[in-house]
Image (cartoon, rainbow, N blue to C red; front, side, top):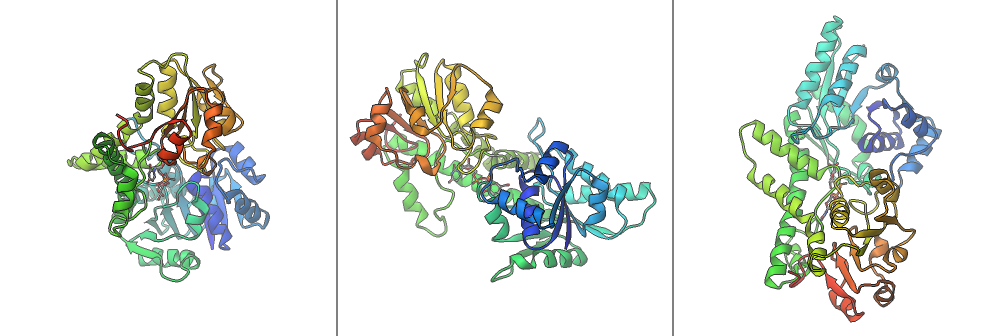
Amino acid sequence: MKVTIFGTGYVGLVTGACLAEMGNHVVCVDIDEAKVERLKQGVIPIFEPGLDAIVRRNHAEGRLDFTTDAATAIAHGELIFIAVGTPPDEDGSADLSYVLAVARSVGQHLDRYVVVVNKSTVPVGTADRVRETVAAELAARKASVEFDVVSNPEFLKEGAAVEDCLRPDRIIVGSSSPRAVAVLRRLYAPFNRNHERLVVMDERSAELTKYAANAMLATKISFMNEIANIAERVGADVELVRRGIGADPRIGYHFIYPGAGYGGSCFPKDVQALERTASSHGYQAQLLDAVEAVNRRQKGKLFELISRHFGGELRGKTIAVWGLAFKPNTDDMREAPSRPLLEALWQAGARVRAFDPEAQAETRRLYGERDDLLLCEDATTAAQGADALVVVTEWKAFRSPDFVRLRDTLAGAVIFDGRNLYDPAAVEEAGLAYYGIGRGRSL
Ligand code: UGA
């Protein structure tokens, strides 16, 4: 099928590449000329396992193209995906200006039936707004063209985006138009594998499904961080509690890992946006408010532990930081827990020696050159001579260090394990003090 995708960010590029991989002819549109040029040359702006290979191959084989020309792109597709950003407004609600700009553009150029597909995470009611915006542009040029607007939210995870996109566990299609649903059924048929993945519902339910999924996952994480904070006060180990409750299939093992707080471009933004949606309808979402508040507090957790360990005196101390990205397998630092940590350490007069396998360029872009930040070539170099080691992101490479060697590398003998990667006994046996999240009495 012929598909047009507006936006070559995470969602747009991955969706475009995966639809091309399934044999469709995909044109991706972006307003950023330099980015489009680079994409044509096979240069992928983000680090995402497997993405560069499928982008290059499908581009070379003529199924995936990139352009800045909206009119040509709109002329191409039977389906027009909107996958542009919805950054948070100052008050936390989603900014729809990019989405509606695409809708206007579609209305200005449309000359036959198409299905407009909202892939961006957008507040409930946006499909209606997109429909009204396209219709208004058509009316302005007195064109009578039929079209449908479908909500088709994306559930891919950074770091596993290509896999998630090629093998979705469900495909949510929000549309009350049988004609549009039939088009999407055709597009997604190759993704069904052994059983039907499509869940068809109305537009508003589909839009809310996306927020509900992310808010539920964020709630699980904040809940576990809450339990971790209780565990360390009562002398329990949250890692044992985690396994104990995860065994109940109604709870499950997924997404109950305590840590330094959730980050990324989705959970913080989506929980806030859903709170905003609720309050704009006169409802105070108390649970969501708490999820958000617990997370904000959790992001200060590592600094709190470090500061206490050093009796509040961090001036002149050097802290080694392993992991800067908000999670492994990405170079994304949006809302990363490493950021409030670095900023608090600098504020307190400490210096940082950091290593991340992918996010160092992004760290440099965010913070520039500064005397109190040394980006190191590997994990061991980062630890060299530092007064403490903090693990912030659970990259595989950090999972089983040689603690005895580490004790000799570090100047101070202490590890702050922000992801509960290590066995405290093994660390302590090597002569290092250990702090985890919610593991016995660290407060
Ligand atoms: C999330 C969702 O998992 C995807 O399903 C969704 O499509 C996506 O948002 C989106 O809305 O686009 P993502 O932000 O890429 O995906 O990352 P996650 O793997 O969900 O991790 C989010 C944060 O939660 C990370 O900071 C991670 O470290 C943290 N986390 C995750 C925990 O602290 N504990 C856990 O048990 C799991």
